[in-house]
Length: 296
Image (tube, rainbow, N blue to C red; front, side, top):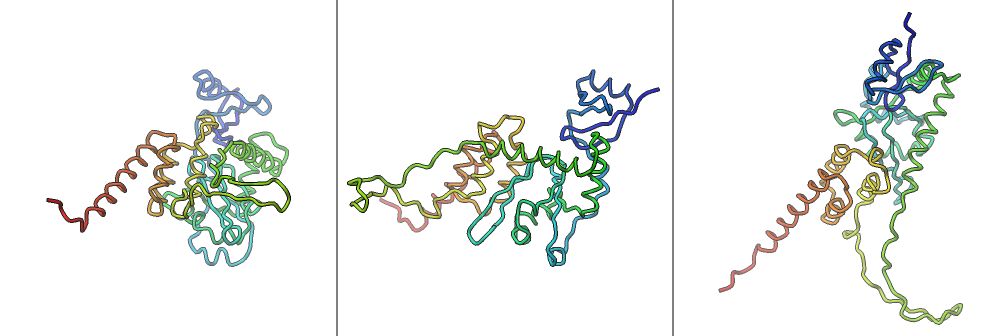
């Protein structure tokens, strides 16, 4: 008699169980690997649509009603790519947040204040786009997901499954936080400094950087997701990164496209940015020609 074998996808999400013969075949064909003998469990080397995801409620569209009362916001990534969000924590204080490439839902309000989530255009855009990149879950759906995962991974309780998923999410985030960002070039040089407290100190500015010359903070943040210090299998996928930039396109400047061209890592992303740089340069040259008298 064949034993029932639990199945996880590449992100440790529960999939439909199989029998031991089928599990051995998947492992032999290098489509899966054993992760546990008790209970018998294999992990596929691909992502699958989980049954619980198919049973999720339809996306909420009346956000005014939804955000009327402060509540916990349970979020699940359904985009098969990590997602970068921006939240204004306080006036002028923008905080970036990475939703990792995993189907494990989490409580966003444990990391970002409810008021900042409520006012985030980024967050709503990811929920309302077609197909949606994020979906909001009820507390009951959140608990049901982890009850199922606890059963399939041998965890004693659904809370233990939540803790394991959060630990994994934090590990992903910590890898991002360890990326070394080069220090910016100094904007002035010290011309005179007598070195004493209250003494004379004179500096000379190298260059004044205007707001228009600064690179969009979200562009910087997204480019960090493909930084050379991150392993290739952990980098943000090319199609997901390009889609993020394309959604921001109308608000990007020449400096932004040039930065993407230099730091976008993926060939498709760099080529897209290169084309945008050429397009803006062409428009600029055309504007310079308007009204310029021809020389004899």
